[in-house]
Length: 154
Ligand code: RTP
Image (cartoon, rainbow, N blue to C red; front, side, top):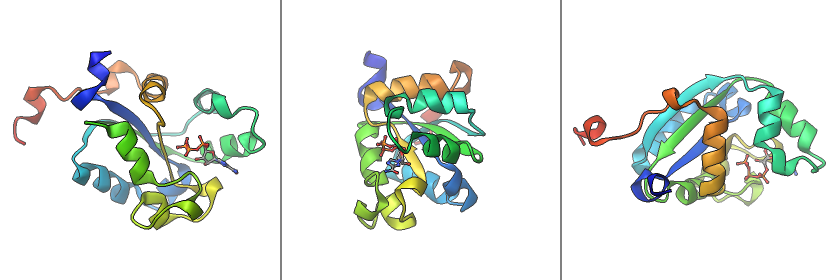
């Protein structure tokens, strides 16, 4: 458990297909880097419907579920893992509200989108979901832990 808290806390973030198609990847990565979080994993993937159904399992009874799976499987997403103190909560603040209409300017959704069904980015909502989502989207060999040796220049 200690490996997942404090400065080692990690979260799962995905730039959704609309964000990739609108070329917002660089802008989004830049925000997390500048905030001071550390990039632990990153890949461009076309997620299978099975993976997405598992990812959004808690929403399976919602009326928008099948539309959500269609949207998320419509093109590649950028899947990422970021590490740092309070990264789960801080990233959720940086994303804004689920509905972009409720998101303040300065947040990613508040700056770049208007529709809940095209809201550009996903971020884990708790440390527990982050652990599940990281294990679902990434293999151990795809993740770099930031030991002292890999951050000796900062
Ligand atoms: P996410 O998981 O993508 O970060 O979003 P979230 O936690 O802020 O919101 P959640 O309630 O988990 O919903 C997941 C995604 O489903 C889509 N959605 N559509 N009323 C609708 O049409 C509706 N509500 C939610 C959004 O893409 C939302 O991010």
